Image (tube, rainbow, N blue to C red; front, side, top):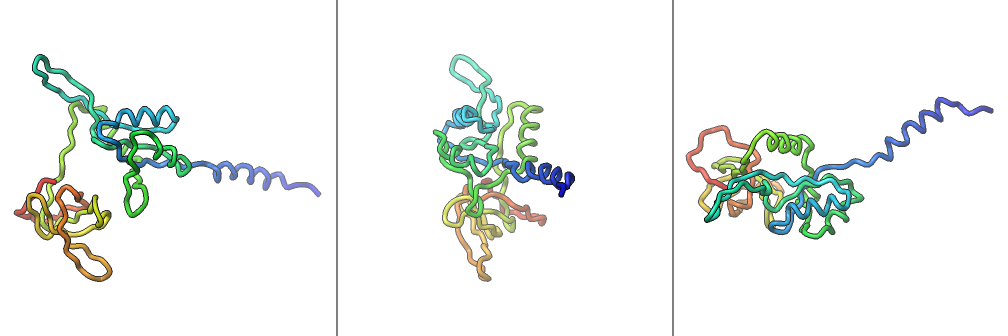
Length: 196
């Protein structure tokens, strides 16, 4: 009996596809002012990382100079697979992955590409916090309510009240304004604004 050559070829052709490792972009928290060092240490481990930097003017008493600073203070992006996460986490200067719903948050490739393109085409790029308005949908980014989404009921300088639907109940929580991020802008005009 002979071996069917087509099925043998098919099996060997499909096998590498199954073994292929998939990498994804993740965000890492770093120690303060360790962003560039962490990116260098990850590169030394042959782990792809990205520390977006921008050039900004700085004034000293005797001169003015353009310096390179991280765009996202306290963050570095890493392109890793599941097997390398321990090596990433154990890198000096890394605090931890940024988590979302108890898993490391995945950053879409398109967002990393957009950041790179934007920085290549522009100088002196700066980040600005988004205004939070009443009835906007926000996500809590710190504390016990981390990951919860809700609707802003009212906004003051340091605290916002967020309506969080949970378990069929509506609970209201006061959350520091710096501990939320905008998810969806309410389309109706609102008079109450808050800079986060």
